[in-house]
Amino acid sequence: MGERQSPSRNNSSEIVKTMKQIDDELHPLLADMIDRDKWRAKIDQMEKHGFDPEANFQIRRHMLAVKWLNVWLNGLSVA
Image (cartoon, rainbow, N blue to C red; front, side, top):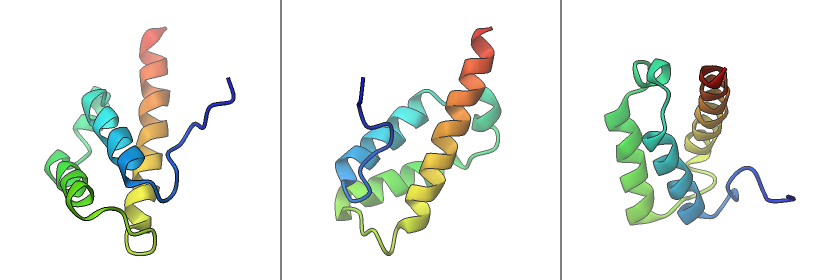
């Protein structure tokens, strides 16, 4: 309890870890909508060059949107 729910804004290793987790657990509805090759290319880019908060703001924003949509869709699948 009390754990941070989203990755640190500037910690590239946490962001990469979260993006890989999303990629592994992606709901089938999202898998059809997301360009997985581009998603994985962004992961590779951050692993090689790190995360620049100003230049990569959109990446983080998209990652969080996909993360919470994925959580919501997977939660609906459980019922």
